[in-house]
Length: 201
Ligand SMILES: Nc1nc2c(ncn2[C@@H]2O[C@H](COP(=O)(O)OP(=O)(O)OP(=O)(O)O)[C@@H](O)[C@H]2O)c(=O)[nH]1
Ligand SMILES: [Mg+2]
Image: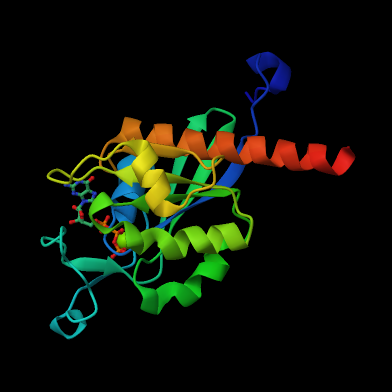
């Protein structure tokens, strides 16, 4: 017997799907973050780092890293029954940045992951989203052994606008990543509401 809507009680919920980008410099933990929260097996486009790439690929701090993303990471997480995020991790190396425009198409917002040992690596990602007015927040991925700096010092070093949230977390930890992703959605929604208000007043 086929049950209609009314027999089953609650009507099925069509979830809202949102696209979120995960950006930041080389080796900051973007692929790790997508893998930590994705409820589907994440699509990865990892290639082995080669000897030839050594002069350009700065591995300081992530010496055990032996692959790099060449196109993107893709994952999905259901935040609520009616809210699903599609996560797109960008490639970190400059030579693959030509992919970013396509990946950014239709994105609600972005996480810029940062490693306090190499903060300058995320400047390009911050510039990218600022220039295109894509709402973003900065997620500081705390690697063991990295010095913990006060949030205000990091904000100053990154020259962040006061309304850009800065959250600290661990890209390997599901709950921590979820908090960061919820932060992006809230920030993007708040920004959209402010813009709407600016248009109507
Ligand atoms: N200790 C520690 N290691 C991490 C953390 N996040 C990632 N790693 C490690 O750091 C390395 C880099 O992680 P990836 O997730 O590949 O970084 P990525 O940003 O995707 O790198 P690209 O795509 O090459 O730019 C890997 O060896 C991870 O195991 C973290 O929070 N703490
Ligand atoms: Mg990667």
